[in-house]
Each structure stands twice: as C-alpha cells, then as structure tokens.
Length: 247
Image (cartoon, rainbow, N blue to C red; front, side):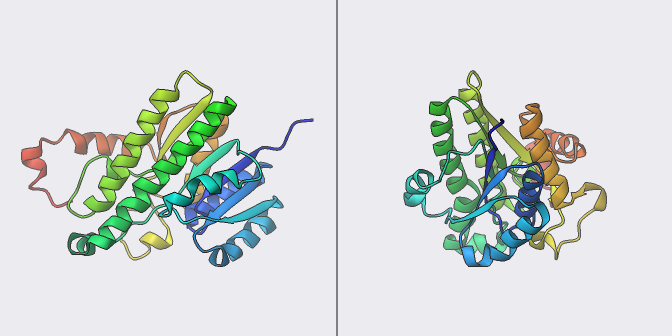
C-alpha cells in the first residue's frame, strides 16, 4: 500500500496559496498549511477541506521570525515530501523609497525569510535523501524596474538563491523548482490594470506548480511561456537605453 504523500504549503491565505492547496488536496495529498495569523486562515482551511476532502493541518508561521524556523520544522508531524512557498508581499514602491521599515519588510518577506526556511528544509531533505522544494518567485526579479525595484530586488535574490540551491543539490534526489507566474489576478493586484493575455489565474499557477513537482521536469518555469520571451527581451536592452524607459 502506497504511503500518502504530504505537502507543506507556506502561505495559505493568498489566492495562489488557496488554489495550490486545492490542487494538491484533489491529488490525494495530506496537507500542512501555514499562516502568520491562523485565525485569518481558518476560512481557507474549511474551503480546502470541503472542496477536496483532504486532511488539512494549520500551523502558525511568521516568515519574519527566523529565530523560530528550526522549532517550526522540528515541530512538524512529518518531514514533507514537498514544500511549496507562495509567501510574498508586493508592498508599495513609493513608500519603500522613504520608509525603511516598509522596504525592509518587503525585502525580508520576499527573500530573506523564504530563502532561509527553504534552505533549512533542503538540509533536512538532503539528510533524508529526497524531497521537492518549490519557490514561487516573480518575473519582477529578472531586471530591476523603477516601478517596483524593492519587490523586484527581493525576488531577484530569491531566484538566485533557488538557483544556487538547485546547483548544489543537482546530484542528489532533492529537487528545487522556481516558478515565475508573471501577472496574476489576485487580491494583491485587484486595483491594477493587467493585460489579459499576460495575466494568469491562481489555479493556473497552482496547476503549473503541481505539474512541476509531479512530472519531475523543469527547473525554472514561467507559468505563461510568453513571459520567458518578454523578459529575455527586457534583459537584453542596453542599460544606457533601459534607464530612460518608464517600466
């Protein structure tokens, strides 16, 4: 009899988090999900359970409290087969330019916390001999732009961390996957005018995450492939021209 697989979702209160949990729940996974404020996540947990019938366990996790990471991992009932991190905060670029605390929160939420926690899970999985880590990063990290460079810089760091971790673990049975969604219709972007052809839905991102972990194919995945081409063009623009653009 095959043992039921477990997926740990870091960040279950976002639209992408909810969709990802549902995708894995429908596939028969046991789910452990986290939220900074568990009370605020209870509605999502009920939704996941109702829609999938999966066993869902909710744990508290503040991604900014790195001093709690080891006790969090040690306190889990099992070392998961798969860990998916969808934690992120877009923040406000103009505020980040004058408010160092806000800028720090954006950078730590999108880079420092997720990177250090996934790095800790990588060590535990390496000791066990197998596992899968998924980090949801962003195309914003492919090149810094005036409109969101605090967020973009943090995502660039996260992407680079995942790349280095993947390189180090390439000879092992621990996979590291980077997902770059591009624009997504979520509560975080609800006040933004987004081009429909470039904008994914949360369940579209969730399916991409699930396929990546189940098929074992792909290291860096753009949810909508057109983004790979767009960002390749943007990266190729000479700096002397790029700095004059308003992006």
